[in-house]
Every structure is written in structure tokens, then in C-alpha cells.
Amino acid sequence: MSNPIGDPGHGHSPAAWTAVIIMLVAFTLGTLFFWLDMPVLVWASVGLLVVGAIVGFVMTKAGYGANGAKSNPKAH
Image (cartoon, rainbow, N blue to C red; front, side, top):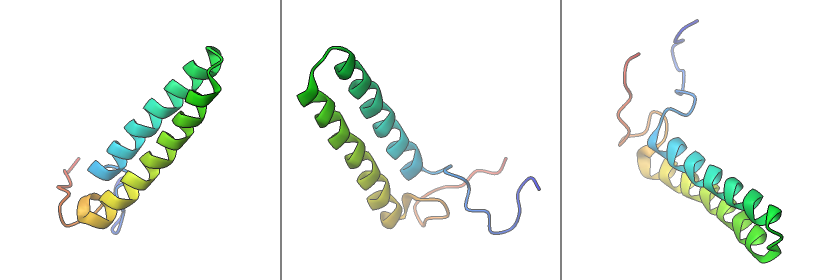
């Protein structure tokens, strides 16, 4: 069961990494701003979280997702 045929890669793609990094930054900033009692910036962080999901979707459609035309899968 190490690598069944048709396995999409479980997020090992530039689109997934970019989306996750943007969302982690958004979540970290949102937590910091919540702790510092800055509600406007907490909501801005929520917006950045949504932007991260959109960036991941757009990059996948552009061919940078798992098994995309522009992604370069590496053998493990």
C-alpha cells in the first residue's frame, strides 16, 4: 500500500504547498490578532484564509496540482 496506482499524491504539489503555507500564515496571524484584541485584523486574517484556498484552486486549474501538467512528481 505504499503507492497504489492512481494515487493523486496527497498534496505533494506546488498548489497544495502554496495554499497550505498561505493558510497557516493566515491562521497564525488571526490567532495573534485575536490575542491582541484587534478584531478588524482577525477578520482580515479570515479573508487571507479564503485567499489561500482560492490560490490553491487556481494553481490546481493552472496545472500545478497533483498530477498536473506543470507539476513535477518525484519518485519516493
